[in-house]
Length: 248
View: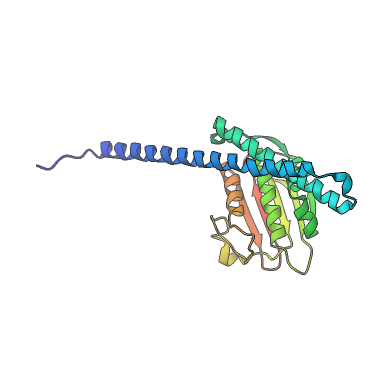
């Protein structure tokens, strides 16, 4: 005699199995993330200790002093990020995306400070104007990472014949806060890459520094809080990322 199957009961069992599997996976990912973040602190602390051992009075060249200063600030910034990330993990705050009113200019300054040497070495000129909309309700870590990724990409994919120029400005459209990040780099052929541009592990140029993750992160930061992002680009004509933030 065939056994009667209750479809509703079967779906419930499968649902519970899936929840159990996802919970186990999330716990493993959390342990892995904590381990990596914690272990990264050791070499960072070691680097900070080595910098502290330097006798700055013996360095007479002003340019070398500036390099040491930038190295020190970058290392301290990395340690701060790791400490904050670990604290959030331990409190499980990463499950809740904190939204607060942020100053565009203040977060841009923090972001560019972290990559000051990259900007200097590339002769990049960053022009910003947030006079139309000075602030946005968003997550602080997301906005800082957004600036870091888009500016780094603009420098990474600069044209060899000209210095990079990156224009960043805020605006308001139909009551929605927007942000534009535009460069004069090598650009994309949008017909070829449009459907893949925000995908994970996607690379569109032969650059050994590219990991194919930056734009994936930017897209996730924006959409996680209900916003959207558009891309305008042509080969050798630069790229513009336009972000529309959801009103919180």
